[in-house]
Length: 462
Image 1 (tube, rainbow, N blue to C red):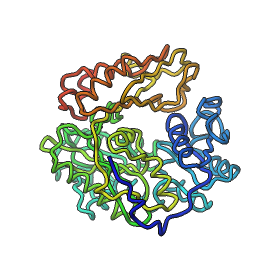
Image 2: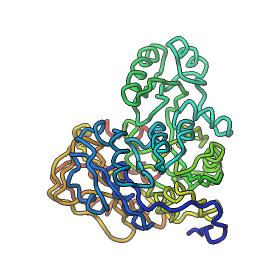
Image 3: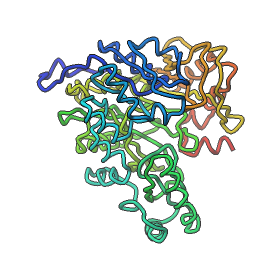
Image 4: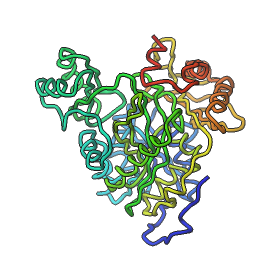
């Protein structure tokens, strides 16, 4: 599927591999990183909150350190406690996973000041690409298509109205410092723009500690297509092709697949090359995802850059054979990328369903609690990334995702059939999960034909 360039190029400039890494996260991503560390001969160290005490994956670490009570702000978001744990464990590096501190440039800077390698981009690269306003400027410089909108943060209502009048309604208000739908408002006229601007800024301030917002043109019927990229500390960057993440609810992704269905070959090449060019020119080292929205004519516009590993990275791993988490660790240790762009090829089709502890029939109400029955699916082409086992209790303190079910097959139709079969096998009781919703999606004719957009699920659930 791919050829490593490591044997073909000099190891000059490569750093020394870490001996011990602290994992500043929890759940399935913590377990995913533990496994990558083991395969690289690295000792994994985990931190945990009181709510996660006794979690089965902690037993697989060389050391597990409690960093505080259940609330994230007192544990997984507490920089001083995580750094203290890293110093106690005498680690070489910290892997932040996704969420929590993974996109905090100040945390990356603290790690550097403490002589601990941050497994991710430099604070400077993260600040440049993680802030959406700064990222738009970087994309413009790299000749990556961007949405028309404000050049920077919006200061007042009158300025917002002026920008919206110029680019035309509908427009969308976005938080400069974050994502996940927080601080985001769609406005179809001046009245809704004025009424939503202050609310969006307040929500952004509460969620990200930064109330800056900006305005862009809003696409009514768009696909969400994103490109997985890797850059190293030697100026090299490659893409691992694209994923389609259009099945989402309130800007939260539920189903991801790769490659994107029904995408023109030239458009695929153009969007992937644009993403790699942006990362290269930003001097970015690590894994990142450049996200785009694509209209009905397959014109694409950069949405944002996620400066971390994505939840949906397994679908890219399945079609390319590249272990993204291990590559992140190698890059942070100073190793050059082991692949040239021409070495990367794709095979087959992969789909990921996020299994959340939520009740779709009750407006996705969270459903934490004990898991008395956990029967995972199996068989050819089925991968399950999860930290849950029978007897585990899903805590109410964190994100509701408890598993990622990934399938791989020779083509998309076979992948859908395989996913439907795997979902039928999957049993998690007595808590409610999104498994029934995913089964419904796999039988939906519009999804099967690849004809969905980012509002498809909202329309389906009305």
